[in-house]
Amino acid sequence: MKAAFIQQYGPIEDVVEVGEQPAPPVRPHDVLIEVHSAGVNPIDYIVASGAMRGLMDMPLPMILGNDASGVVVEVGEDVVRFAVGDEVFTRVDPRRPGTFAQYVAVPESYVALMPHDTTFEEAASLPLAALTAWQGLVERAEVNAGDRVLVHAGAGGVGSLAIQLAKQRGATVATTVSADSVQQALDHGADEVIDYRSQNLAETGADFDVVLDTVGGQTQEQSLAVIKPGGLLLSVLPLAPATLEQAAARDLRVEPYFMRPEGDHLADIAELVSVGALKPYVGRRYSLDRTKDALLFSASRRARGKIVIQVA
Ligand SMILES: NC(=O)c1ccc[n+]([C@@H]2O[C@H](COP(=O)([O-])OP(=O)(O)OC[C@H]3O[C@@H](n4cnc5c(N)ncnc54)[C@H](OP(=O)(O)O)[C@@H]3O)[C@@H](O)[C@H]2O)c1
Image (cartoon, rainbow, N blue to C red; front, side, top):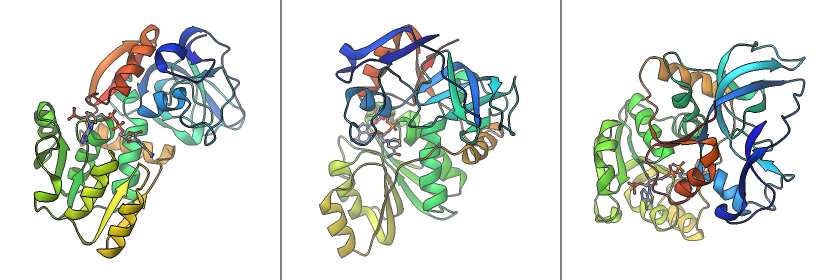
């Protein structure tokens, strides 16, 4: 089958290839998906660069990609929830990536039926980013009506969905974006937009119940100044020691987390998309042959919404 893969870790421009690779074996709990579209996430270029070696050692060659939408073409002998012909989307097993390919095998527990009236491209843009937003704001923070929520990087893959999820839960939502992304953030429902290039967060005088940090570094540290006592900093990036010290001094809760694949959460997300409460936003499209360009653009940290690779 045709796939985008690496045979060694290193700079994206040197290591990403497109060519023939064996189709994946189908284990008893797996569904085999014929991939139509594959979403691109920062983890794809991070893993290919070798930055995760030691934490996630995968056999090479490794087919890249963690998000997909497509059609089930084969089911393992123990599969009970899906049948051949189902249109599905998934964030695959992180130890078995490979959605930038014609076929990917995924445990059925990581798969859900696609939302209604959604293209393959839109569905592929959702899984990893939407699960990250969902598991932070809904599962951990239990955001509810009346909460004040700050979503960092509201123009990005996670942020654009997190704004919508927090709004859907009844929160008032602020977000950080550059000037070029203001309209996009407002379109996603943000009540307030903070230009992170020209405004100092700590000087905005804002007070939030929950901050979702998808930027890290200084942004993470400055966020503490705008959280109410007892409020919560959620972060998907490493915590600086200073963040922990300052949070403890100000009676703030800090929760770092990694998203995890979860078909049931994806089904909840599909429901929201089906009723129009959550709208996928695909900012750029690439062919499978141009996977390297897609990953280089993702690594630029200038992506708006999601980048999607059209496979079929
Ligand atoms: N631990 C986990 O489970 C987990 C899960 C998902 C993602 N992540 C991490 O979370 C980060 C975000 O992921 P993503 O998929 O949302 O990335 P993304 O789509 O590539 O984010 C790109 C966006 O970031 C914005 N941005 C860049 N610098 C910013 C800053 N200083 N302040 C505010 N916005 C800024 C840009 O907006 P402008 O155009 O407005 O500048 C751009 O739209 C990545 O580092 C990723 O690895 C971790």
